[in-house]
Length: 422
Ligand code: ATP
Ligand code: MG
Image (cartoon, rainbow, N blue to C red):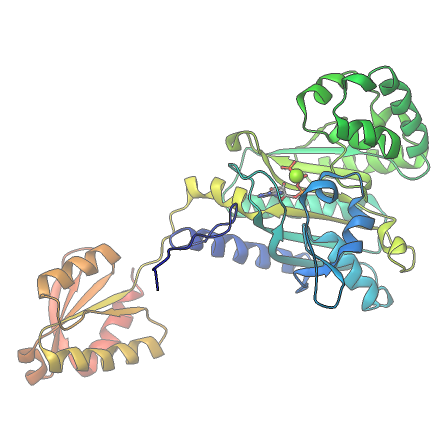
């Protein structure tokens, strides 16, 4: 048969060492920080009924209009590879009656999301998000708490100089007035809008504000802003949020034009951006969705959440990362018996939680030493036939150049003591 090389699907990527260590560092930091804020993990399915995304994200959103990986399974059901996590989390919350538990219920999830987008820097077709969703409290305290938590998390992984942009897009009470104002504003500009926005004009004019087409961006420059249409409750919700953020020392700016590309948001929306990322500059985004649980058949339950884009975080952390791990010990050997004995010694170390690499019989001592160097190991142990006969093993500290010999039996204690000093 003819040989064939295969590539991954367009717009998806493998995640390999050394990058994987940055991923692990970010994931570990998220878990640690979310834990102290009381967020528990949810493992949500990657495929979901298509309807949950259409219903929540909205028919006129970019995601539903163009980006979903949707297929019919063998049973004739319409299935979609999740493009985001909130709809799944809400489906799970309602399906499992989590509303019966005391409020707020706070969750996080992580995993791959799928969107059929034009692949480019910062835009993949399979990308990873870590997200949080908190259910059951409408007070802006909860919004502030998760924004503060996001800030702590981003700082913990070494990121600073990020912009926190917040806005309020109102509730079902203030939305109709704003919608009318948008219809009024765009009615004379309809001809200049893209075909999608012409349709959005009919169905959901708010979506025009999130269109990425240049002509539409130009046309909406002087569009009415939602903040001028907020009802009294939304105004006071937003001002309370701002004062809590100030109290918590979260530096933010109000961006009155940020409406976010998903229909389920109400009141608070926010985005975290970095100037270092270029065109796709948002690392995290979120907001409140006070109606969604009810729309999914649950009791009225306010909720708020965010999602961070892992690839964009990794790109930012890469500049600051130091942490490619290296083995503590490398055992170089000469001769077959020594090579076998080395495996046994390595097992002993590994059982104690020490990362050990062993040289292979075929390689010269010199090339094994080079390999230890490349690994950036802390110690090399050297075992030849001669040492083996005497029950001793040579050691060399690659960090400071010191060297010596110890009994094979003592080598564990010896290294344990010395490794702790590194
Ligand atoms: P954008 O405006 O960049 O398209 P979005 O509003 O579509 O973002 P959200 O659905 O809010 O993004 O997703 C939250 C985060 O997930 C984004 O801020 C980004 O970091 C990341 N993200 C979204 N789409 C992609 C993608 N195609 N590839 C990589 N990361 C993505
Ligand atoms: Mg998008």
